[in-house]
Each structure stands twice: as structure tokens, then as C-alpha cells.
Length: 383
Ligand SMILES: NC(=O)c1ccc[n+]([C@@H]2O[C@H](COP(=O)([O-])OP(=O)(O)OC[C@H]3O[C@@H](n4cnc5c(N)ncnc54)[C@H](O)[C@@H]3O)[C@@H](O)[C@H]2O)c1
Image 1 (cartoon, rainbow, N blue to C red):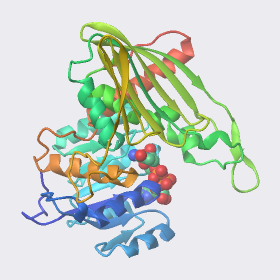
Image 2 (tube, protein in one colour):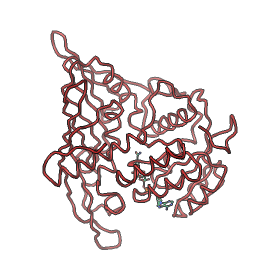
Image 3 (cartoon, rainbow, N blue to C red):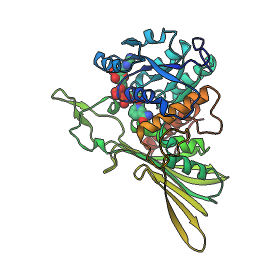
Image 4 (cartoon, rainbow, N blue to C red):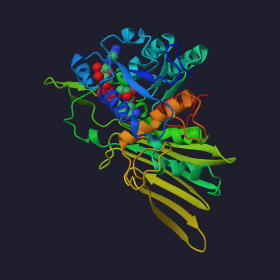
């Protein structure tokens, strides 16, 4: 799918709305796009919008940028922008995403894709109505270890499934002196709290495998109820910090326990994404804690965990040598490659970005978790 302004062979011109942590990370991806080997789509960053002029100044370093603005409507009014990536606080997702779609642009949205399920459904429905190409940011499945785990999980070689565990764990909030930010306030982050922040990272692979929870039992925790406001006082810190969801998914006709964990207060974990599937015959485990290592379980006369050292086996080939280790910026590049390849109809069998349906389903799991926690019982996700 291409927009009217884009000519054949011309680079896809990207606009970024929200030039904070993620907006700048994404800009750096385009700066080394030539590292992709024979990738059929060229891309350049054309325009950036942020409310903070100091952040806009940073983007002056990017030679292709022609438009810097504090008004996202000005960026969307440019007929030189084809695709828009939006990385703003969650309470703004619905309004800004709808503005992008109605301006005739394609969208790479940030998770959680709306502050709640209703917002996600509204954006999804409008994108369908307008026929825009929309995907949602979730980069960890593009790691070689995650790709291998996904392939094994869907291969049918695991036997009868005994259990699935997926988690995304942080520890940066353990320090009570850390100042408040919008991600710790329900009005900006959403009532699902940490599930809005980290949820899609955890649910993306299970949902892609078709492993949708039929029931959820949730344990949610709020640890510190206020934090320094950075001005000498304190502000309420009212979001859920930790979520442990004990779910059941029907896989191969059987009810399989699936544990989904999203935590901001997990001691010693900085940014740990893990995925593990155990079956009666085989199993697989991957964690960013050991980013080069794939663990595979197999059973013969004895039971074995086999450890494989991985290299740079990413879905989209780059000039990087096969023995080197990929990192976070490489994942973002792979995710953008998947987005632009799929948009151009060139994805083939490769792993695609999270879909709007997966984001809606992820919200449904979080909403069921909130109901479960409130009732103390089990809840069923909508849809
Ligand atoms: N995929 C990932 O790994 C990942 C990691 C972190 C955050 N995120 C997501 O990215 C999004 C942004 O998070 P962040 O960490 O970059 O936040 P951030 O606070 O660092 O940046 C948000 C930026 O949006 C700007 N902004 C706010 N309102 C705006 C408006 N109306 N118009 C233009 N700019 C506006 C702010 O000035 C700020 O610079 C969120 O949806 C978050 O969940 C994704």
C-alpha cells in the first residue's frame, strides 16, 4: 500500500510524532538503513513533531529532516509524509492515531495502541474503514532467539503442551526516590498500568501462535503509592506496578496453563523479556538475560537441556557478520523492515509486526485481569 505522494522507487518518507525516548530511537534506525542487505524499500525521516522545542533541536542532526513542528496537524498536512510513527503518552493515542489515519497516512503505532480496549477498537475500526496500513510496535520477537523459539513452538514437535511462560521484567522502579513520570499515573498511562506499558511485549508471541487465554486469574500489585514530583513535593503514583496473570489457553484441543508476567518491580531485572514453552517431547526457552543463548529441551532415554549459541540470524539480512550479537537498536530496525516490507507486499513468510487485532486482544487480557483482581476470581477476556 502506498500513499498518493509516493512515487515508484522513491524513499518512504516517515514522520514522527513524539520525539522522546522512542521517537529518537526510531530516528537512529533510519540513519543506518543501508546496513540492511538488498532491502527493497528505502526510507528517510522527513518530519518530526514534539511539544518540546529542545527535543526538536536534537532532530536537526538528521540530514533528511525538513519539517520540525510542535503541532502534529502541521506534520500531517504535509503531502511529503507517507508513514507516521507515533510515540506519545497513552491518553493521546486514540486522538492522534485517528488524526493520522484521517490525514491519509499509514501508521506504525506504539503499544498499547490506545489507553484501553475501547480506544484500540475505535482506531482499528477507523483504519479498516479507511483502508490504511497499520501495525503496532513490539520488537522483541525479532530477536534471533525469539524467532527460533517461535518456530519451534509452532512446529508441532513439542508433544502435548505442559505450560507456557512469557514475561517482561524491569527493576528501575525499585528506587522510591525515582521521580514520577506519566507512565506511573493512571490518567496518562491507563488503568491497566504496567499491563499497558509491558503487556503487548508479553502477549505478542502467544497471540501470534493463536494461544488466546480463555480465562485469566490476576495478581496485581501497587508498591509505592507516591513518588517525588521533581519540584520538591510528591505526586500520587496510582498505576499497577506488577501483574502476574495465570491464564488458560486452549492449544491443540487441550487446556494449557499460560503465565504472563509484566513487572516494573522485579529485582535484578533491567529489561528482561522471556518466552518458554514446555511439551512432553520437547521445549524451548529464550531470555534476553542470555541474549545469545537458546535453550532447547528434548527427551529420549534421558531428558536434556541443550544450549545453542546464536549469532545475527535476524529475519531481514544485514551486512553484520553472522557471529555478532544483535541489540535493541537492531530489533527496531528489523521491526521497521518488517513493517515496510509488509506494507509493500514483500513480507513473504517472514514474521510481521504486531497487528491491530493482537493489540485489541492484548487489551482484552488486561481488562480481564483488572476484573479478576477486583473480584478475586477468574475472568474471561472479551472477544
Ligand atoms: N516499543 C518499546 O519498546 C517502547 C519502549 C518505551 C515506550 N514505548 C511506548 O512509546 C510511547 C511513548 O513512550 P516514550 O517512552 O517515548 O515516552 P516519552 O515521554 O519519552 O516521549 C513522549 C514524547 O511525546 C511528546 N508529546 C506529548 N504530547 C504530544 C503531542 N500532543 N504532540 C507531539 N508530541 C507530544 C512529549 O513531549 C515527549 O517528548 C508510549 O506509547 C510507550 O508505551 C514503547
